[in-house]
Length: 265
Image (tube, rainbow, N blue to C red):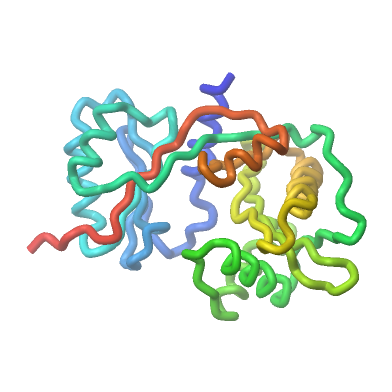
């Protein structure tokens, strides 16, 4: 069963509905990756490699040429991973960015009640986007605050009847302080939703606020006809959290990256 779920995750990651004109998709039987003029690893990333390919070093060289002068990243799930690929990537100047695993939960799973002083709202306006951005910047040291123009662009992607992304913010009912947030990308053709950006302000942790945001995402996923939602959780941070939420663990994903690929002269 885990093999099927791991493949489900990979198929979701290779659905580039959100990409717009930010990057070009290179897709062949042996590899799938993004390349962009922007120096942003989100848009310069490898998402799939055929484990049957006999010369992964050749693929690594192709990717490095495509990403030259920019940061570059490999996000390799269990269906694509081989020790030979890992060796080729790491010997070419990439380093291990961390280890994570795929986790899922059935949208019908039982959930704890939300704290009485917490309300979770689905994001539908710019102020809520600002609140989400603020929580993420507080929770994730590498996050950078976004300008309103970028937030407005992202807002358009998560509102309307054709939205493929939903965002949520948990507030203190009494003070209206934003405390926790999380996103959910929708893959109706896979009956699956991918969770991302889940985090809680440090002073609000440990009292069920994050659980309430997870529950809200499960409820919305059910409305959209999805069967499961899931995420890639880092083993040392979010992994223990989603395990406590009674998610089911599946296969690993490997993150290998570099902040700069030298330009070939």
